[in-house]
Image (cartoon, rainbow, N blue to C red; front, top):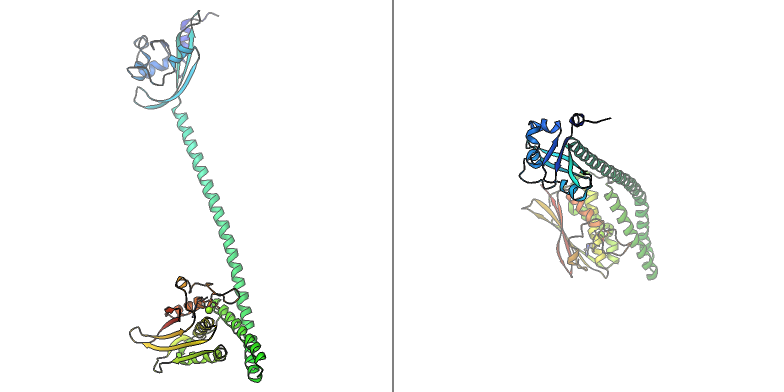
Length: 379
Ligand SMILES: Nc1ncnc2c1ncn2[C@@H]1O[C@H](COP(=O)(O)OP(=O)(O)OP(=O)(O)O)[C@@H](O)[C@H]1O
Ligand SMILES: [Mg+2]
């Protein structure tokens, strides 16, 4: 079939992409309808002019133009670029260029096809952004899931700890009475036995029982299983009662107690058992700090300015090295060898005294001993 120029022109005009044919000097020798419509110019006024001037409103060839390469290599070329069109809009253009060789095989003309793929590219970009956003959301969800899992584990651990605490406190309750009985019998035995060797052994038993009793009581306070309630107490009487329990042990450890009590003290509204536990913990610490015996001074006094009653504990023991000062009230901080101290004593004292709106502090410390002052509010 014979194909006329008119026939080809009609076929190419039907294509929506912009098609033109240029020579080596970018001179347009053919344009399709899509270009004439876009430029709103008749075909005759475009043909014969430079491609960059007509299509891109530029004085010289476009920077990214691949047409010269087609003339150079004889190979088709393709490029995708964002360009500003005649309307001043930024568009994404796919640029295909094919060579048209003459009979000798030299490229005389090149067919340029421009396809505006802006919408497609924008959609791709949007899809890419959505994909990234989705990835981010999935990562966030995964992170939240991990966090939830770890929280669940912590909760499980906390539940376990709570039931262990419950077990420990009920065990401590069970042990309290038999320990008190053993301790009482030890004291009775000491009165009956006069043999020094046997007395030494009973003393060891008595010391160890006292330690067990203290640990058991600390555990009870720590797990808040104490049933005491606040009442009015004379602090001097409270101290005397608790000292009577340990007097014997202090004596065999060669520790002398010196009491200086203010007899004019107002009554304190306190939980008796708990304050006794504080006193016991402080006395025990002094006993541990006095392995070769020594003195323990306990003083009570009123601080009129601060409307408080102060209890001063002072011993002539080892004292506390400066580097430990900030840590002695921390739970489980101990310098004693394993099995000798839980490190709960002072932290419990602080808890109890704070619950009474009072304060406890290390007042003086030297290598000649330690002095703690407790302050409790009074009317
Ligand atoms: N009077 C004191 N003299 C010297 N050091 C003391 C004195 N009181 C406390 N400490 C130091 O403070 C640390 C913490 O005391 P805390 O009573 O809290 O625990 P602990 O006595 O070691 O153990 P626990 O009281 O449970 O038997 C002790 O290990 C000790 O080093
Ligand atoms: Mg202690």
